[in-house]
Length: 194
Image (cartoon, rainbow, N blue to C red):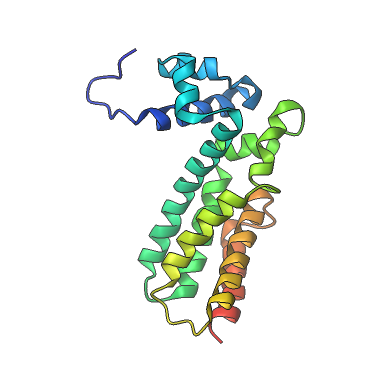
């Protein structure tokens, strides 16, 4: 079916990933099949395979697509606080944690505790290499303008710590986003403002 007049047509890959995310949030990951996605997007099943690959590649594409939405708020926080690294980290952490609270896809992945739906959870936990690499690169890019007095190894360790702590609280919050962001900012200040 053609898109409504005046609507923006997304690239095919993105349309497939968005359809997979929608199906995952409404019916669960086990309901996502290449044939179902083909029907949703209006292409052949083979086209979905050609564009995405198999279901594991689709899962990673969904994860990275959602991560990009989180990293957009991180970039915005660093742009807003371009003169204060700790405030940028506080704002970025808070924005991510607030976004996570209402994120239907994230809740669908984290709350899946049985059957095939657990296939997605490792992408956020034990097999999060792609997610971590992309997130850490964005943070490293945003920290470059600051003169932090850290060598490369120290800066990598600080970035890794912040990204992993935020991800941990995204997965299992222990306080409000504001409180957690304040705690992360306090730790960052101790490390980055020597």
